[in-house]
Length: 442
Image 1 (cartoon, rainbow, N blue to C red):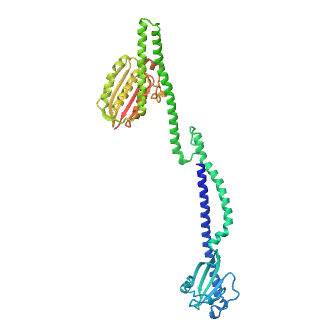
Image 2: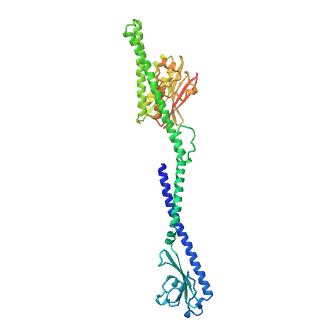
Image 3: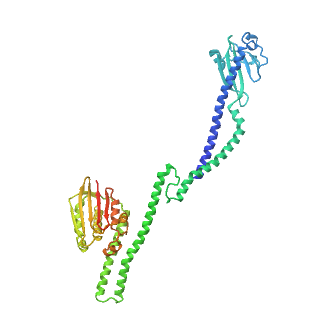
């Protein structure tokens, strides 16, 4: 990037120098033309007013002597023939009546013209004025042409261009460094606070890049934490199964112990199977492209789920109830089954003996609401933002006793993310219970 900016600056400098030289020469030559013509006009006025060489009073007998060396003076009669010329023999000169400056002088009183001179790099400037006697006085002067002016200034222009080019290289290098520096510093300090003097135009892009970077870091940390948690969660039941089976294999367990150990092995196996199924489902939701949406009665689905979980509720000594009327929503049926099940199962597991879980479906203005309310242990405010993370548990000891995997609410979060028309809200207070609202819009 630096090299590209430097090259572009150098090219721009060369173009600027060339354009400046050309423009300066053009402007200078234009000013010079006006000055020369005005100088010739002033000289002609002086000659006419002073009747130099009796050109006004006796034009037929004019003999030009002591004329200015830098001027060529020609007197032309009304027929267009030269009567007298300060630099040439008029006998070899043709008729001048068709010359632009002469024709203009005869018709308008004065005329001017610029023609290339026979001398290299010179231009001839002509000014002609009509006298009262009908003759025309023409004065001419040779001046350097634009080409001549440019050629005469080439050495100075070369030196000046080299100095300007060298200065531009130094300045462009410094400018490039100052332009790129904030970007380089940002790349080194992407995780740091603030914008580090980033250009205002780049702030939206920097904000987006920084957010994406933070999201990548957060996902990497979550993935690392998830891997560690999976290893731990899988290791616990496997250790239990291995330990009890080894006791049975070595004949240490006898009688009632065998039956109790077999029951614990079965329990750990079921927990391991549930955990593996949840991990697989969570992985499927991470990469799913399912968009099979249909009109379904969320009230009927919630009622079926409550009926299915009644035995689990009785086992945990929790009263599970349902209320609601048919409400149609647009969603993925399988995912809604999982969502309702996980919300209700979570409310039952993290409740107190004798507690309640009330599930209800109702319409609220232009949206349908699924509400799962319990009067269980509640969630501390500091933990409420994290309960939808994988394997995150508010009360780890209770999770072990209830057999929870810590993935239920993570699955709920993924299902919500896959539905543009579904939102979730959590309200909880420690020791009083938790209410989760799922809002369905059209």
